Image 1 (cartoon, one colour):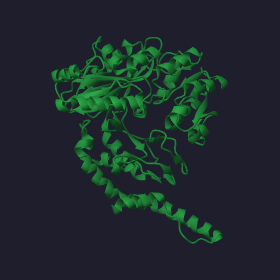
Image 2: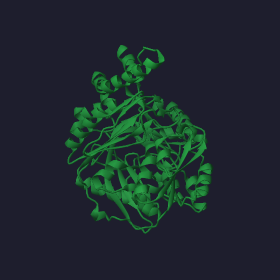
Image 3: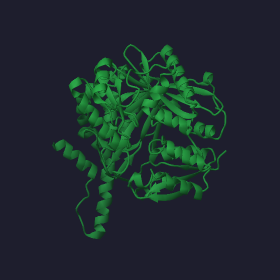
Image 4: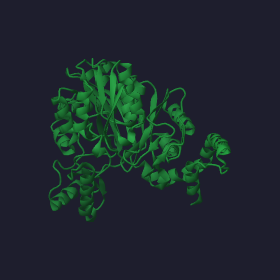
Length: 501
């Protein structure tokens, strides 16, 4: 087993990986930028090394610097987390060539599945159904328009070299096609350094459902059931749950087998996720494969009792999977709410500033994967994800009730967050009924945002005790400085500005 693992990431995923490593008796090495000198993942690790200035292009994306640290610290392996370099073929190759184990799939599998058009081509050679679309990136706009007409509008223009909703456009009419392609190409180039885009059929009432897989280096591949990921805004996931309230036992079995076949088709090993679109008639189609750990992996851990990071480490160490397919069982229901530093009332504008107050919920079946603390500065340099609130209970209704209770307890002062937006989704009757699809946010946007305003007074009351204590401390301090002007919470000021509008 490895003695030292370098975690080539930051924030909540770095901390989450390090916790499992510590439980396994493995020392951890953190890397950090100038902006993250006192970040929780840095303080938690056994060793930590500065690798550059705040922009990720000068730090967390510099795999030459990361490899230098790995050699200096004598790391046995590197865990990439998710995002940054986790699906970078060049990084995976250089890690391996340096004699260090990459905790992830082989570089060729990353290359095949990381390129969306290549992945589609690969899947067409299997029995896994694929969404109708082009097999090659768009080169000729007139030819592409004719293909779109043959497929039938609406269609999706999608980035070939990336995901997360960037470089993606829905095109409903032929007249909009050329402009949509140009905009998607520009956005894709900016986000991924790759302007290639392709066409995919836009499905009716689609559900975004993904299957977690594990594969060892001895040919054993299993799936750990599905996650429902249809609550999205601008193609970014907000809330995930497992099991899906939409699919049945028969469909789960078929999709699970397809996920395993997908992994086998590219000689995959490690943890991975096969994503599908399922239409209202319960026809499913391969969407893409993420060759890394997903943000939403904790819901799978909660219902299966499997530590996916521990499995990743064992697989990378050459061990056989610790669980067989017939041993995978579902226990209860889990819901994950992503907590972003964003203002949902202002079209999810990123929010920066200092966390001046913090109350993290706890209790039975309640888990928070995060890396934040009071007094911490939230900067504009990185993804706005602060952490994930995961709640488990014996059934879906109980898990949703527990999630709402936990969200009511959750308080982050000083910045705007999506806590209350998640609560408005959890409370919505269509979400509670279960068979929602990816159009949910657009269909009920006005209702969701209207409910946000009803939470303001309640949240202020929750914060009141902490704020009163904060002001008393300031008053006590002023007795020695001669100042009598009370300090006001910047978070309350921000909320008041929104009320005044």
